[in-house]
Length: 78
Ligand SMILES: [Zn+2]
Image (cartoon, rainbow, N blue to C red; front, top):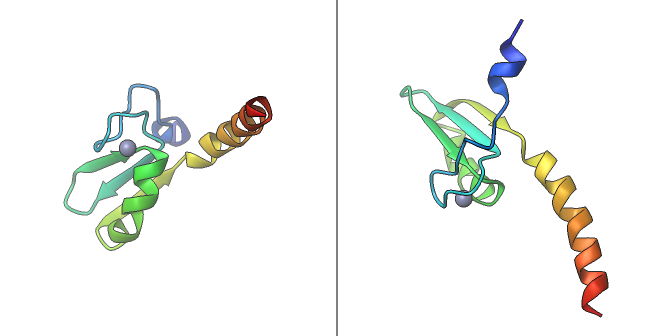
């Protein structure tokens, strides 16, 4: 019953490439796990599809935050 909890990424999970908060986790068939921020996730996911047994993506949460922040930022610039 805690399968959903096990899938949640936390602030302690960091992108393997840049150290930003991870929103995407890929479990590899070879046994390892890779973590990516939304940016690097998009960059690497296409090549991971063949290697990963499971890809968990929470980047939609980030997109919601960024789009609201971007709207207020561009309004302030003017
Ligand atoms: Zn990254």
